[in-house]
Length: 95
Length: 176
Image (spheres, rainbow over the protein chains, first blue to last red):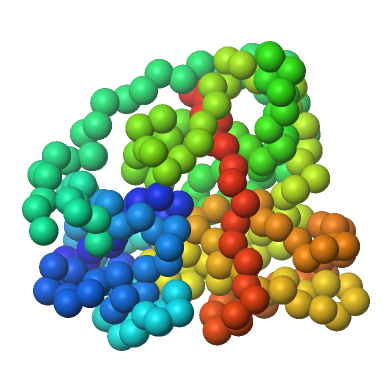
């Protein structure tokens, strides 16, 4: 199953927090996904979850004041081993 | 929104120098932290021009790029220094105690690309933080030093209006 992660700035490509939904379908992805100011949102990674061990499905919480959160969030304990990266690309303008 | 479909996975490898014997010996004295199978050495470095960078991560380039995805020299949001100019590596007075930082990394992200945590000090006071993917260099409340930190509450402090953010830091990469 496909998973994506928005990253950049002080937020690395790999981390446990990914999402199931297509970020481009959000009205305001930064707010709904709860991206912090330090995540520049310039890059989108897309990968395939190849190991469901320990994976938790939840909803994003706001990182900054005024954000809504609520976007589907998938927490992958060992993302480098459990997600096969398919591509990562620059997004213009950033999320 | 337009996608520039240039894959970063295949971005060309950059050249970084290997550690000198002196650098290697000095780095051995720094206790690293580990996150996603990558070792980070938060330290203070002195450069050949005499300047000192008290908040620097020395990291193996091959490990760094697998986690961070883009070289620091190609990212306008990151600061970097070349290992070639480093003449001295020392402990940094500005890093979190390694066992505290390791606990934060082991607790995993609080959301997409960030950590939230609350430090507990020996006098019982607390301070909340939000950082990016590197947690080691943070400001402390006035009058506190790193040795005053007793413990950390993971993912606590999200709604704290007084929470603090990371301090600026440098990346310094070397090749295996």
